[in-house]
Length: 29
Image (cartoon, rainbow, N blue to C red; front, top):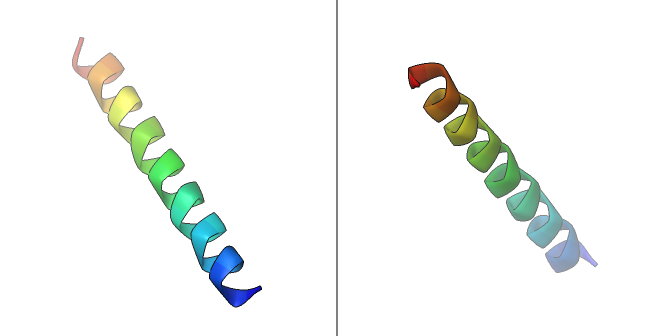
């Protein structure tokens, strides 16, 4: 259960990082 929770957090963080990168790219263009 705890492992699954950590995986979910990792996935959410990666999703947020991707979103931030997209926003930075859009902002630069």
